[in-house]
Amino acid sequence: MFLWILLLDDRVLVFYKGELYAAVILGISASWSTPALFLELASEIAFPVSEAIVGGYMIFLSNLVGALFYFSYFLPWMSK
Image (cartoon, rainbow, N blue to C red):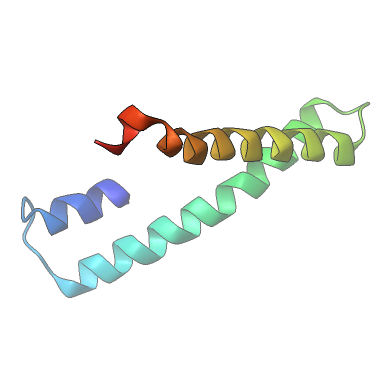
């Protein structure tokens, strides 16, 4: 969906406002729904382990990766 938005924005595809609205709505709803499904799948795969432990571990790792990404902008050579 976000590739579709990029192609519409760069005028590779013919721009229609309705297509842009559809791509944004579908892209945002897909990006909001997939983490919950991923956490549920991981909880089902690791069944004997508690769902709270699996979810907490996965969310911790996700936050750690996000923090490392944002803190990487404090490195001097990343500002270019």
